[in-house]
Image 1 (cartoon, rainbow, N blue to C red):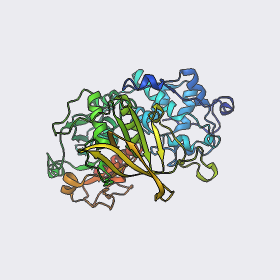
Image 2 (image 1 turned 180 degrees about the vertical axis):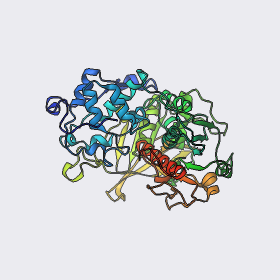
Image 3 (image 1 turned 180 degrees about the horizontal axis):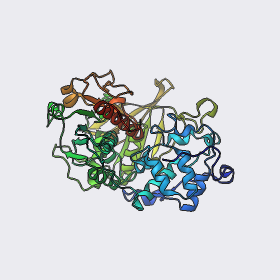
Image 4 (image 1 turned 60 degrees about the horizontal axis):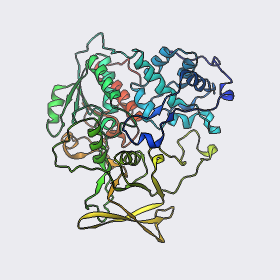
Length: 484
């Protein structure tokens, strides 16, 4: 790991000389015809110029908690890219982030909002550079398995193979523990694989990491639903520590009149089905009907990332129209920097999926869902004020053949694993465990990621997985060389 010395930036005037430039997208008319990634990377010359814009600002808020939960040393690897030392940049980046090719694609980049140059609305293109470093590292063969030289004889079970579980498993294996990952689905990745569409992140990135982790000694057990098909007691008896990293996947239920109509679905079953089709995976035999947006008028209720993924997936399946309902007011085009920076601001954001042709309705609440003969025909909405109360005369109806409920998650699913474990949970159905040791009310069981903190970002899951791994290692060995 390197650390940049203060005042040694290679291009101290770079931020004055070069404008911000991000990687571009394929045209919407082209990219909606496929499910592949559609970003057009910058060439080396432009990447070096973007790295040169990092301005040696003194206090780099980009890699504090306000900017980067895993504390990527962003100024350091920007400098290394400017100096064309890509291999050292890769080593630096991987010292804090197990999976930068994931975050370089799907993280919303709070680091860029915290960048000092964002005070002028021209932050360094950090996310673009991060992805470029990670992709080059793979293409050049620099990313290799890092198996432990000495085995500890300790065994750890990780339940769930999303970003928190994968990060924890990799860290624990690298310090010599025998790590077993138990995954309910046929493949690893959690929502990275089954929730996030391929057009945002192709699944080959996950597959490469799984192979690397297997070479490091991690053992994956697929099709195992701990607490349902395998009793938790078997794990607590056989392992020295157990980490819960199963995510928060219990959808929030709006209890709308007409919610039982044919054509009304939660977002995740739709996205999971689509990802299985794209990945040529068989559908589970649970009797769930196919959910397809082809030739349908689609309404997506919700304003977050999951809703946006439903929008982009619907367009790729050939929807006639897609309308997104957001109960929040239309945000301002720009935030007030002096009151918000370096924190994540509320401002108008348009995702690549929304830019493909979605109609967006703000301050729009859903009153009920209408149908004929049990089938959905429309969504009855109303305009609301800033307190989310209906505005008199504000009702309107949207024709709809398909509605997706994408209004977030109520926490972890209690049935099965959590009921069997008996661990203490809070009012939001999150497992109670602090950020110091990630230990639950059962001293042998730890929790990390969305299962502990609630619905959050992939980068927070990676951070929690890494920190939980250190805590487990410290508890088992008395000390740990793993970073926090």
